[in-house]
Amino acid sequence: MEVPILRQGQYLIASIQSALTDADLSHLREALIAQVGRSRCRGVIVDVTALDVMDSFAVRTLRDIAHMARLRGAETVIVGIQPDVAFAMVQLGLTLKGVATVLDLEEGLAFLNRRGEERLLETKPKRSSDRG
Amino acid sequence: MAEELRLPIAADVDVVEARQQGRALAAVAGFSSGEQTVIAAAISEIARNILMYAKKGEIFLSLATNGDRQGVVVVARDQGPGIPDIERAMQYGYSTSHGVGAGLPGAKRLMDEFEVDSVVGQGTTITMKKWRRMV
Image 1 (cartoon, chains in turn orange, brown):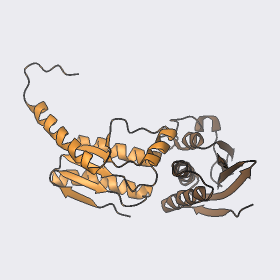
Image 2 (image 1 turned 90 degrees about the horizontal axis):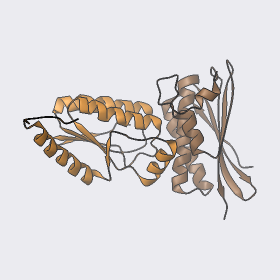
Image 3 (image 1 turned 90 degrees about the vertical axis):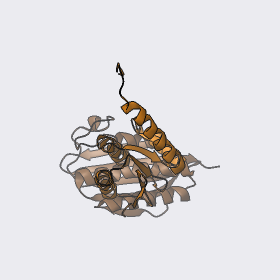
Image 4 (image 1 turned 60 degrees about the vertical axis):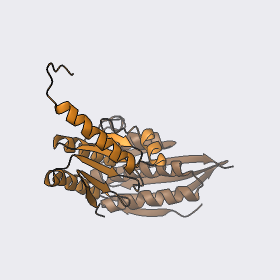
């Protein structure tokens, strides 16, 4: 089951449509990271609303996507984690530490827009840069 | 008792199938949708463990009752290499396969009962149960 990846402005949106196998998830990771470069995008949204379960493999793959995309210059945000899925994740002891998560697609776009503005400010030259 | 569902695990699509069947059975047993997801996640973890360590095996799903409790019973069986050090394998974050190390301990956290029976060179059987009080 291939996950469609849409481009919207500077962002890529991967919208998961059904339960995914481990191979599907790995494929999504490769496809997204390749596309970040090809489309020179600044943000990635992964919509997991339709995901039935987030187990350790899914969580690790999403974390990898976020970290790899960041190394390629794009910010990732995970949207649409369902209440039941969040419940099971917490019980499993799984966290998405270091990965942005917001409620839904709309919030995801707003998040990336905000991050983009912050990034513009960050890249302005500073006189004494002493940020940790 | 109710019939048992036998699911072969030999490819990653089987992992998805097993957890979806487990969820469906949990729904039949009257578990909330949150608990159904918990059971599905536990099945996903142990089914993946079969693939990773034994390449193939089986998962059996059934319903059980115990007094005023109804439950889902998941048995995962393989003829793989077995687990040499069960105590370590049950430690969160320990993995011999570059995994997260959340498989067995994670599944244990999710379920009410969890038992590992493993003989090196012969295979592993994991039995796990989740209960709910009938009202």
